View 1 (cartoon, one colour):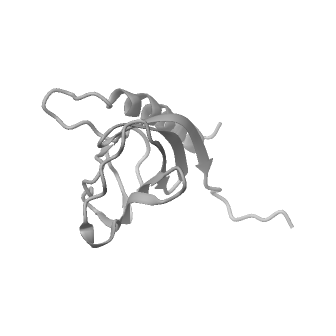
View 2 (spheres, rainbow, N blue to C red; view 1 turned 30 degrees about the vertical axis):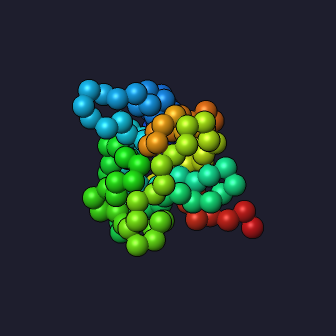
Length: 139
């Protein structure tokens, strides 16, 4: 496995394990939707309903290092795309099925799971898609 693939694999494991653990509060601190421990260079994040309707999405002007993503709070270096006009996203409904996508320079992570509270999400399935680092063709 390449260094890049193993780094992203560790990130995937960290996202799944930690995202499940953040459904509860950590003291007086609001729980994160995702806690990120892995490679740098995050470019966008999106949370959508099961049918694909986007609830909240943010994009970075340039690849950015984040340690956490809090639902509805735009991280430094990012701008909110959905909902428009910097309106806060609606509260999540416990038990509703959701999909998330985290895009970085090396690839993307897709998670499906359920809302566990108004701003928390428990991923149940995950898929990692790595970007090809070469531009060679198979011609």
